[in-house]
Amino acid sequence: MTDPVFPIALLLKGRSCLVVGAGSEVLSRTRALLDAHARPTVICRSPDAAVRALATSGLIELHERDFQDDDMPGKWLAVLVDNDPSLAARMAGKAETERVFFCAVDQPQHNSYAHMAQARAGLLTIAISTAGQAPALGRRLREELERLLTAANMSDFIDKLAVLRRNTPSSERRRVLGEAVAGVHFSGELKL
Image 1 (cartoon, rainbow, N blue to C red):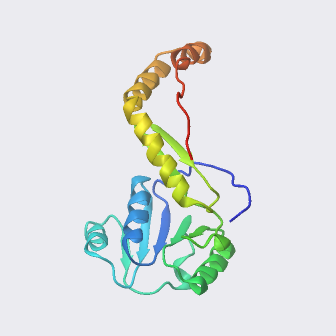
Image 2: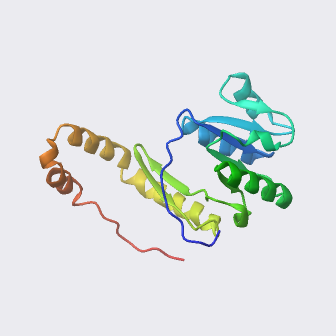
């Protein structure tokens, strides 16, 4: 994927999503979907104990087999974690037909979306995209941003801003919240 991206924050609560493949990346992507309150279906020939535990607890639907074309309909989003170009092409075609956002990890030529590195501090999420071309840089920037956000105690600050927003009449919010964040700034430099 080398085209410009349009960044959005998807609301996946209660929505059916698909994770296909094997290895630690299956668990990582599945947990990320669970964090978004999505309803993941995992297709994995040999799931590890952690993936099986999620299925046993009822948090995910697990099928211990290969991907089948009829796994795609009704999904909002699908991700393939295996480096299998023919499966990626097949899934991308099916996703396009079914209008499902699809990502084949490390195979951006098949993708209709790219995962973004996310730095989080409480209610704040900062997402970083390299359009799927430099994920290591996205991860490193996420680590640096999380370090800065933690050091600044951003989680507590944003909670206070949320309370201030709720307690401020809408006609005054722009001014009051603008004043509350006026001192927020980065200092230092970024080194490559």
